[in-house]
Image (tube, rainbow, N blue to C red; front, side, top):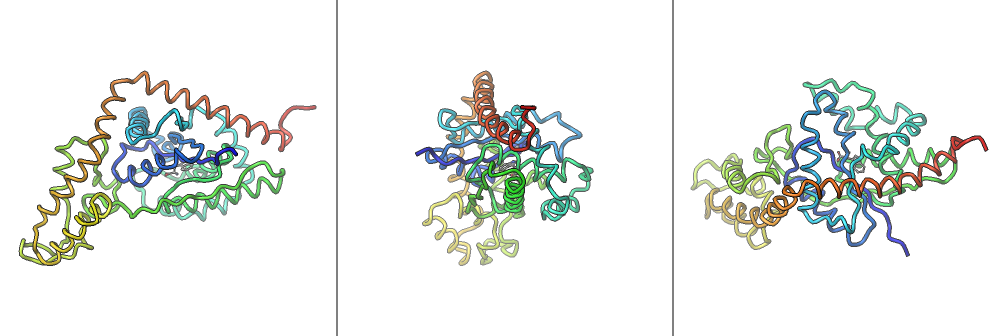
Amino acid sequence: MSKQRVLSGIQPSGKLHIGNLVGALQNWVRLQEQYECYYFIADWHALTSQYADTAQLREYIKDVVVNCLAAGLDPEKVTIFQQSHVLEHAELHLLLSMMTPLGWLERVPTYKEKLEQVSDKDMHTYGFLGYPVLQSADILIYRANHVPVGVDQVPHLEITREICRRFNNFYGDVLIEPEALLTAFPKVPGTDGRKMSKTYGNCIYLSDTPKEVEQKVRTMMTDPARVKRTDKGDPELSPVYQLHKIFSSKEEQAQVAEGCRTAGIGCIDCKKILIKNLLTVLEPIWEKRKFFLEKPDDLEDILSTGSQKAKHAASETMELVRKAMNLDGLK
Ligand code: TRP
């Protein structure tokens, strides 16, 4: 029996951080054994918000590929590719845009939120409204069964399923309705306690040096009410403890939580344990990053081989789609 298909993408909108590692990459690596996986760099999606300045796009795309490999994705097992190199995505996006009601797009919560939140860029564009249509094309073109994403992407997956049903209703059963494979991971807080995000400048990047990681953790926010070493704290209010929950053993978690509540240990002691554990996770990744960064030709090869494979799979679907829509010639 052939394996079920998994597809997911990541935007090259900045350097990847430890939130991307535990939220996406590590999960992608786990799935590569069991499924036929297609993972891609959603560079067109990055343009929906960064269309005016693409100076760093190439660097960010490279950072994503290097981190995918450093996190353990094996190009022998999975197909890693760049969205803009598989033009078929654009064709399906166009066709799906014809049948997607505006109301569906205007109702997407991420759309409304970003329009309100982003003030330094003009997001009132055709492309940004169509973001979920492009994402639907990305998914449906591979007839993927599962899409590993975080909860923030669920509305996009819902639209994808609705667009899929609408297409199949009009033209027959061609596309496969995908399911979200929810990544059950707690939100990774940044150094200031807010969600880790490059817009907040609170990230620990996979490209940081050991010194930078140490420095960032040392100056990280803790329970704001614990001012003096002798004050008792509440670990649940400390972003450092949230990171312990992800990167430290159960014993260490219990130990620092107890130490915080009783003022048995200071914040610096607690942070030292986190630093040690973060370095343990990051060291092998740094080593592999170095290895791949020294081989730019190999990176290029991996991406172009992957894009060719993806193009092959995408073309198969597009033939069915064109035929179903009577766009496949006169005979
Ligand atoms: N919207 C996704 C994100 O920001 C990226 C993405 C684009 C994606 N196309 C996709 C994810 C297709 C899964 C499937 O995280």
